[in-house]
Image 1 (tube, rainbow, N blue to C red):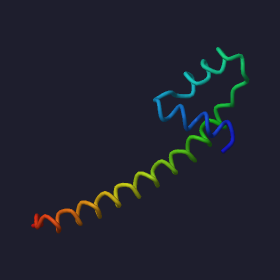
Image 2 (tube, helix red, strand yellow; image 1 turned 30 degrees about the horizontal axis):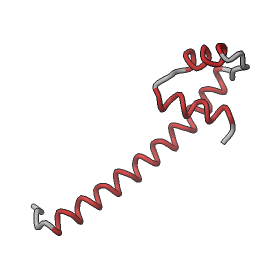
Image 3 (cartoon, rainbow, N blue to C red; image 1 turned 180 degrees about the horizontal axis):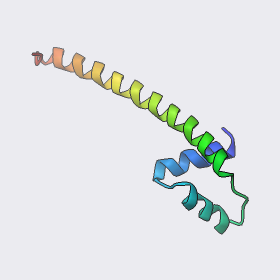
Length: 75
């Protein structure tokens, strides 16, 4: 994962946006990515986040169904 993608991923995880991350990079005296690069990376990261979330929800539903059958708690 390149540094821009990692920065966007981390900032999304803690709720920072483009401006806030830019301020953080400025405080570090480091160059920051352009708005178009940010948007591109954000779309990539959002897609991966969504795919992982969907897989985890499917797994949780399957696990829940297995537990319900074991407990004979199925409607």
